[in-house]
Image 1: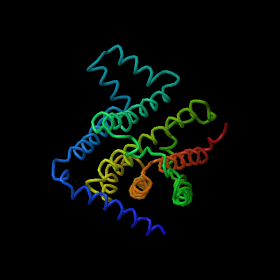
Image 2 (image 1 turned 30 degrees about the vertical axis):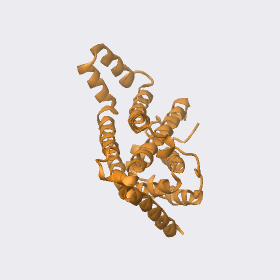
Image 3 (image 1 turned 45 degrees about the horizontal axis):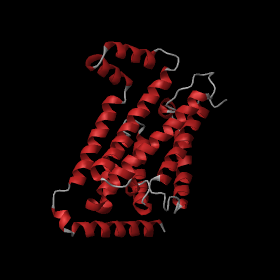
Image 4 (image 1 turned 120 degrees about the vertical axis):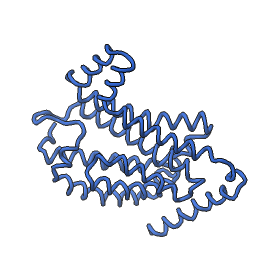
Amino acid sequence: MIKELAIKVFKDTEKEADDFRNSPESKKFDWKVFIVCVTTAVSLTLIRYLSSHQNTIYFFEHHVSHRIAMQLKYVFDYCSYAQFFRLTHWVFILSFSYLVIPILIIKLVFKDSLKNYGLSTKNAFKDYWIYIAMLAFMIPLVYSISFTQSFQAKYPFYHLSRNEPINHRFIIWELEYFFQFFALEFFFRGFILHGLKRRFGFYSVLVMTIPYCMIHFAKPMPETIAAIIAGIVLGTLSLKSKNIWMGFLIHCSVAITMDLCSLWQKGLLHF
């Protein structure tokens, strides 16, 4: 059944792309592809150089104000909520780059509806069984990986001390973490994928999967390899359903499982 579904998505997407490629418009310079690709490069560059709080402090120190830089240094490094503020800053930069910039491009440059870029609610939960199957595969895998030191060192991003219970800061962080998954899904399975599909057809899934894999390079190798598979599967399903919602829920479900497994392995799963 999965094979038949993938073949159908391939044929339907290629037919739409062929209709465009056979039109007079396709013979002109494709500004949409150009803008999507350049925006992707710019957004990922902003994340690479600004999502680190140290880089933000450096930027303000050398280009804006020494006083503001020192205030930021206190907030990010010394105050009692420093870890929470560092992570919130990271989510803010990711959300701005993955969500705000593409939305501005879609609305102001393309003058198009966000529904055409994965935010349609129609058929949002159709073929839900595929996502359940993905969870059934991923959760045991996450559990087995949770025994490794590299996994426990990485997750959760918000580090609880030995005697620190799960508190309001940790819960707020998890909600912020979920929001950045929404921004990430919109960027990769919405903006890039649906922005390129009329030119590249089904192969836009593979184009999108390359940068999606690369943003995982700082993570454990098994997770990066899994990102390649996830990029292809979630991209294919987004082409079929025309939305990102189930992919977003999958991300949130796997993420909370990873964090809880890591806390449990470290003996920190207490309230």
